[in-house]
Length: 438
Image 1 (cartoon, rainbow, N blue to C red):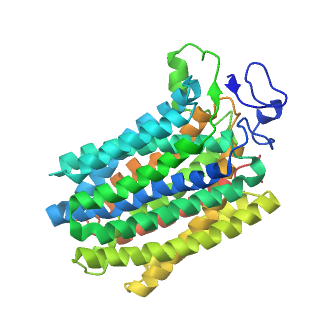
Image 2: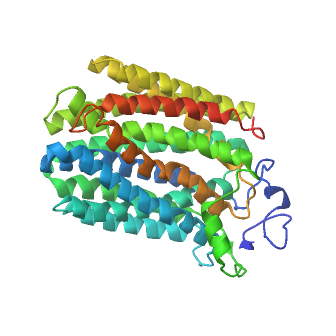
């Protein structure tokens, strides 16, 4: 792939520095020097995805509970499964198309712009949805749009972020996403009294605006040569990298999938968990408790993310942070599920937040250092994206089954937390199988 940028010595067929071809050894990247505003907007864009997630986590279950409390859990599982499947299909394809793009806007900027606008269209549909069927349409548009943005964001770690700062940038972006979730949760809870349209449109507009700052500031790579002709085998490979040829990448992918599934299990059902476990029915009270839980999660997440991000970059070791984070998160889940009281439940959520912070401090750095090469970073990082997209399908199906163990109305949320604990433990064990990255 030939790209336009200011570079020293370039490989003619690729247009990138020769030592950037192998990300595990590279201290250089194909992207050119960015302005200070890029680094600010990069964090803001990750915060935008958090705002979107926090808003959906409050607004959708609250609306479903208002429409039909008895079916809220089942309807939420169906909606999340459908939306997750849509994202699963399109996001890796976006990564493949992004690598082949010859747009004057660059490789990644068109997807940031188009994805943000698609997400905005989803918010418009959600704002006036009269039934779960219309919610499905809005969520699909929303998930597809943010899937395109997420693909571009992850690709920028290979395009623009040097290895020596990847862990701290992983911590920064992870923390930005966590703060975004808190902001989205709080904002939506405060807007609940203003009605359905306000809950979706105001946080949605904030998220889209934050995402578009990255479109404005990014000095993107531009492809100047014609991509290879399309063929079916290459398209199928969009969804696959051989675990036998790339075992480290496979184990890193499994680790991320399990850890993401663990946290999605908690966050997706947090609103209904609080309502069911503590006997709360008032939407404003439930949103208030959810805000408390998100707040303690966020504070502990930020502290550990930056602490372990610095440690990971200083020591050049990624696996210890990931392992510690997974195990601490598992401990927090057990604490949260083992007590009927709200204060200890919040302590458990705080431990989960701390574990997630340690994990995200090195997660993206670990994944990028396990990539086969920089030539198809968009496609390969699209496969990485599957590790956090698949849980959006897997978890709702699992949640639908587990919450009905001994509860016909789907309120056995303790079983969900036990499943999340098991997944966190196996995520930590998976990272031990990686050999190329310390």
